[in-house]
Length: 136
Image 1 (cartoon, rainbow, N blue to C red):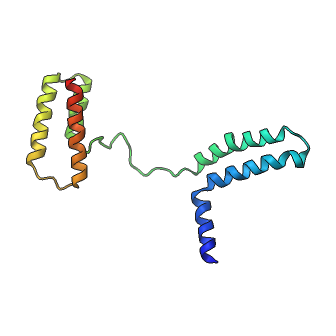
Image 2: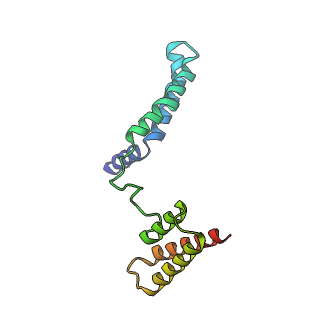
Image 3: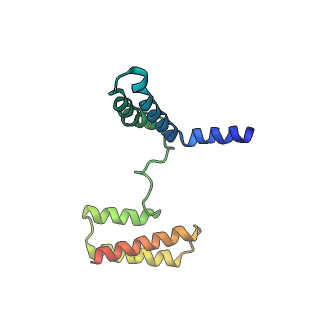
C-alpha cells in the first residue's frame, strides 16, 4: 500500500498541472448542472485553464540558483568570448579577429585540457562554425 501512496504522491508533485487541468475540466462540466446556468462551463474552463493554471505554474516554478547568465560564458572559454565581444563592438577588424582566433585554436590544441572531452569538442565545433559563418 505504501508503494501506491508513494506513486500517487510522486505524480501529484511532478504532474500537478495535469491533475489541475483535469479537475478544472471536471468542475466545468459539473458547473452547469449544479448552478443551472449554461455559461458557467466556459467560465470555469476559461478561469481555470487560462488564468489560474498559468498563475499557479508561475508561482510554483522554482527560483533559479545563483547562476547569472550574464557572467556565464557562452562557450566556456573566456578568451574566446572576449574576442567575440571585441569583434562585435567593432574594436577589431575581421582579419585581426581571424588571426587571433587561429592563434587561440592553436593554443587550445597545444595545451592539455583537463576538461571533459565532450565540452572541449563542443567548444571547438562552435569556434569552427563561428569562423565559417564569419568567412561567408
